[in-house]
Each structure stands twice: as C-alpha cells, then as structure tokens.
Image (cartoon, rainbow, N blue to C red):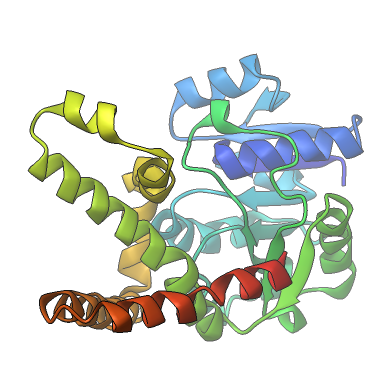
Length: 283
C-alpha cells in the first residue's frame, strides 16, 4: 500500500499516520478534511504529505475513515462508489452496527472493513496525534468475512505490527458492550463535570480542592462533543440500557447512605474491587 488517504486527521487518524510512516517511510499519506485549517496543521506537523479531496479516492490503496460516526455513515457509500478494485476502505468509529448496515448491499461491500481500535485520549485535532497510542490495545474487527481476503490481511497485518490485539465481534454485540465500557464512562464523566460546575460557582474552589481522583474521573469530560454526541445518537438504545443500570446502582448507593448502612457500602466497594483483577487480566 503506497497511497493512503486519511479522512479526518485528528487523534486517531493522525496517530495512525505516524505509525504508518514509522513502518514504511516510502508511503504517501494524503489528508482529507472539510476544514482547510486542519489540513494545514496536519501538514505542518508532518502527519500528512499532501492535501486531497474525495474526488481523489480512486487513486487510494487504503482509505482510513476517521470522522464522527454520523458523518462516516453518510460518506461511506460514496467512498465505496469511488474506490478502485485494488483499494480498501476502513473505518475506526466507536459504533459499528449502523455503518455496517448502510453498505450491506453495496456492490463493492468487499472493499470495506469495519473496525474499532479501542485507543484514545481526551484530546482532539491533529496536535493530539501521538506515537504508540495503539500499543497493547485491542482492535475490534466486524464482519471480516464480507471483506476481500487479500485486502483485509494487509490491513490486519499493519494493526498487528503496531502492537494491537485483534478481536472479532459482530456489530450489534460490539455496540452493546462498548456502551458499558466506553460510552457510559464518558457520560458519567461529562455529568460529574456538570454537577461540580453547577454546584461550585467559584472556579478557584474547584481548582484548589480537586485532587488526582477528581481529575482522573472527570478527564473524559474534556472529550470532543462533536465526536461523542453522534456516538450516543447511533448507540441510543444500548446507552440508555447502560444508563438505567448505572442509575439503579447509584440510587441503591444513595439509599444505603440514607439508611446509615455503611457495612453494606463497605461490602459493595469490596466486591467491586474485583474490577482490578478483571482489568489486570485484560492488560
């Protein structure tokens, strides 16, 4: 793959660009964005070699679609219309069911591979791109049997080479599970930040009293609303289900506090400590 087009040169797209260049400096990376300033910044940071437009897609060996998920669903059919017989389009969005559905009957369906590299930070834009973002992280692959074998293998070899573990999952299972382990945590962070902002009108008090626990818990509230609002919309049913279960647990905790049942609170926390064993096993 010598001509790679990245649509959306932000945290994920930009970090992939860095890894591609590190593995093969001879590759030419083209950037596509609705904002000219984004491409100018990506060029200045050496994330891309040249600017491009959607009309250039027939020249692509690989297209990486890394824009908000609602925009990805709208744009993907057009990309498949334009992709050559030797090209492949991948998307890296946080929801998979809608994007797989929109091209399920497309005549060039075999030129698309749906995936979700589960990696990121709370930052966005080209300046957020970093090396080693994907090291030891998991990449969820969906419906790979619908993708051309040779094209698919080249891309999966790349993600393995940058240190990712590959996991196969169907789109609806992916969206259900990711609602709990990713989407819910972002909502919790946003709402914790909102609660503190509304309660503590004097921002100096927040700054002076905020410890590392608060900072780490609210970190995700710095994430891009432009990216996350469409994710919540696309995964609405699963997110609502996860929220209802979370609210049930919060309400239960509040009720134990009201009843002065601190032995039960201790036991709840003790039992939940098992999460560290689960996460250690994942890592």
